[in-house]
Length: 236
Image (cartoon, rainbow, N blue to C red; front, side, top):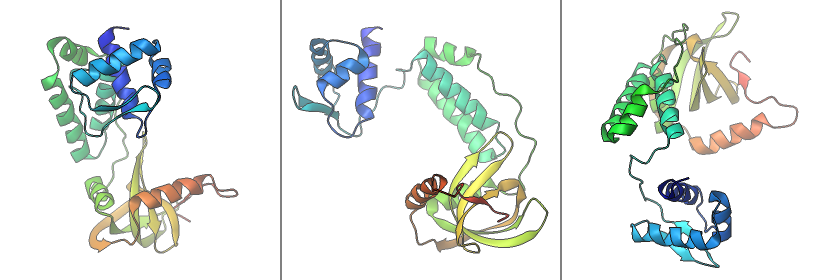
């Protein structure tokens, strides 16, 4: 591993921790001696990285430090390209366009050799799903961001329709279907709603009384609750 790559790894490790990390832990993580670790810390500090701490107390990277965009490894470039290409194939047209725009912005600031690697990556994404939603998923994503209630008509697997008013807090993307996770006022419980079974989507200005992060945490806990297999499909 080159020294520049090692310094990048060190910064990435520090970014994953909010509390001070001991020098020994950092040295073991990047596979160097403690003396080399101290020299690397000093080098990064000299280059402007806001790393605080000292030997015996641990080190922490202050929030807000941004790495130059050209510092990507080969696998990081492959991950970015593959993820962007997958999103670009999704039926959510606004999200697909945003993925293509983001990839173009990244390519614009990469040095020539890395830009060539980005263009030449051989990781491909297959055809998109044939299940087209009749609703605008952008409205769902906006409601999640704003923590606003959504109204719509939902048809279960048997074709039975019901009106729902929900508190959306997550949207899952699968190969063949998109699923909204929400608190359903009708069922007074968490429910999963397939986007291809939703119609008549109505965005409201009504803010729901919970924070989405809190509901997401509670929903995740419900997936592991004894005797319960997570949130039910909306047919329930």
